Amino acid sequence: MSAGRILVVDDDPQIRRVMRVTLIAQGYEVNDARSGEEALEKLRREAVDLVLLDMNMPGLGGIETCRLIRADSEVAIVMLTVRDAEADQVEALDAGADDYITKPFRTQELLARIRAALRRAPAGKAAEIHQLTLGPVIVDFDARQVQSAGHRVRLTPKEFEVLRHLALHANKVVTHRELLQAVWGPDYGDEVDYLRVIMNQLRKKVEAQPSSPAFLLTEPWVGYRLQLADSTHDPA
Image 1 (cartoon, one colour):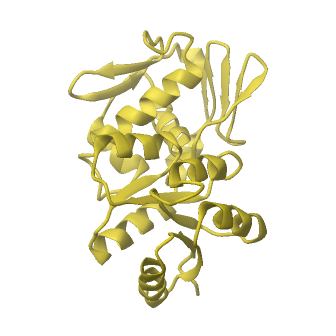
Image 2 (cartoon, rainbow, N blue to C red; image 1 turned 90 degrees about the vertical axis):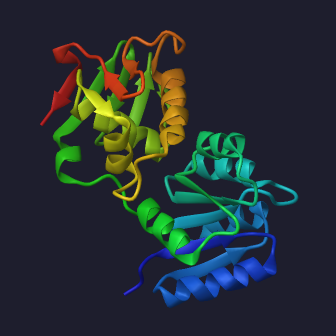
């Protein structure tokens, strides 16, 4: 049985070759693309579970490719880059990537990131909340849709998962570590920048005044809290 279907997108043929050999050895089905344009074409024709996407490609770059993929797909995306700069990390997550890894990387680290990205928010407790109302914004977790004053708002998969976990613990402080491990997995806990990017994006999408949020509140040095009246969310 396949561990999952992965599309490797990188303009370097050696990187693609190494990735293919490594991932096939771990039980994954692997296809590859030399450019963002080729990746988009393959994604239109073939279903995959995860995209390994190089950030620095000629032509259609990794960031724009990520945005175009995310515009109509919730496939898991892990960005690859040779630059270890916070600005790159922010840009990747802002474009909708699930995670980010810097070249050169250890094989085990890459495989761990892939496993984490393929693992969606756990069922069970996550299924206990169906709908959330934030002023004029209505979040339907079952349909994974958001409406604001009748207009659809698109959230990335990680934005949905962060918001859902906060909604499950409404009016309580959720620590950085708890939120990271609930959404990304048990190997995470120190990647506070991930949350900062996601929360900034969520506020832009669901808050009337993102710079002065009414719902998505920061607890300095600790975590975040979703401030709600009791009637604004619908648990099971």
